[in-house]
Image (cartoon, rainbow, N blue to C red):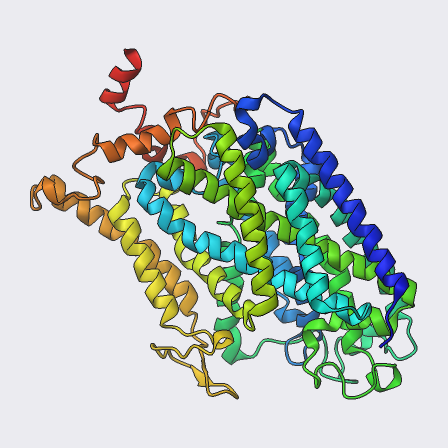
Length: 578
């Protein structure tokens, strides 16, 4: 395939425009607020992100390269089709649930990162443990979408994959490095516009190609392959449900989501942003679905692509750029390429910023350097943005199973962090012992269930498992949801058991080595109190949120102990009085 100068010029212009917007947003950050809260301006944008920019940036975080390419691939692959394209509905429901139940309690308490409530209730040790799956999820996700971007650009422009990945990563890292959330948010506005415009411009040209059969016909009848609407076999219903719950519930406990929730100007705005982004995710999935349907409706032997078709060549994961390349005019395919590049960068920058925010705040500041200056935290964030960006790029270039690692790490977010988040916000009485037990049980059950993408054989063979072509056993049983529920109930049971054993005198107080039950006002408890009482987390910056005194579902089940026990401490009261 020939080298396309026009395509390269189009990509360069697009990247320069994104970089310019990012630098402008960084300048805006520098001139916003006082120097004393610079780190918080980088992490949560000074808590003044409005509805328009907030809605765009939250939508763009979900509508990434994996979302666009994956939806088109699922619709195209014979035997799967639209029935298995779960991301649009799953992520939209995830945002709705997040807005209904999680956004308001998190924003109302003025947290700065998703890990703050865990360190407040369970202590800094548990916060460090929960940072591991959260970091893995963000890093492997960024690496996976950088890898997808390189393959996409190489299909259309025919330039070296490694060069395209490195340049894209450098630009995303650069504006994130200098501007933080402001740069990410404002570039997301531009990127989302490019995604919408680029893909919708491409769709009519692709559908009108002579080699494409009417997608209304191929939706229900077999023409070139099985109908693209797809179907769910009775044997696969539990797998479908397991994956759907993973997307819906496992899409909530991500720092990238809560970073936008916590940056909104009020708790009510945080909820509205979630609902707007849910609608945006559905709208942005439509062109990807149509492109996947076009791919399934094309006689590829009548195009320059030739035979065999993309499925036979094992290029189904690149069906979107292939459709752009072979079914659209050259100048249109470059618009589509810009859209895909925008989708990738809009997710990658969010993941890099999320990982660096959690490390700088919850690991470096709150665990090791509680008296660190704001300037020091800013520099730690900048260094980690660069390191995490470089690490994601290296994994995209070197790792052969980046997607497998991301699948496994996203499972851990669902199995470990989601039940912990439920407990810390809505279940009264959980403690560090239960949190650690739930963490370990969930981790063991997930690992022993195997992972085909990493060629990891299961140690527990659940009912219905079967070997694939590589003799790796595939689980049909919804073991991921089972692992999540086990982690959730283990946390509750062990927490209440530990509380009973210590408070009844069955176990002596000296065995409470985590200071979670008996030593309530110990130094470890003071560390938890410090998390939300010192200047490290400033709660006074909250935008006015009118308290609701009516009885609601949220207030009935909110874990008030997690939020209020610090204020009831007599030692803290005496300290404050002095």
